[in-house]
Image (cartoon, rainbow, N blue to C red):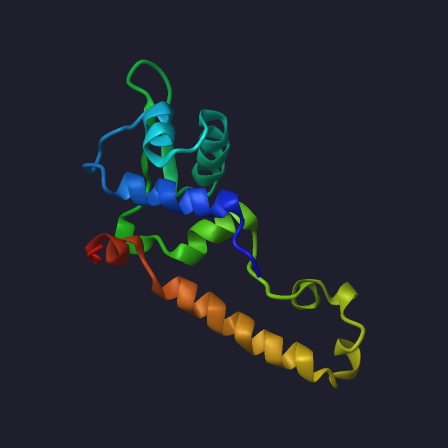
Length: 137
């Protein structure tokens, strides 16, 4: 499993928005400059985060973006999946069409990877942005 650059940027954008005063709107340009992400790519990510209700967008002169949830309610898993879709370590765990052994229930690799995948998802679910804000550099 590999977290894409887009998901990595989304995590950074959410963390940036968590550091802004509650209720304050931030322009996409400010976000992109602060996080060193191109404006076009930032806008693409912000659209996805808005679609998943993690971020609110506002149009007009006083437009911009802000969090739609409290940092304590946003997990790493939620942000990664908002961008990359479901987390899976092998395609046979996501799509049975790619698993030629599952029907016989004899694939030890499938079982081992399924356990690892479950652990990975659980660990990403445990980490909230509130906890990240508390961490010292």
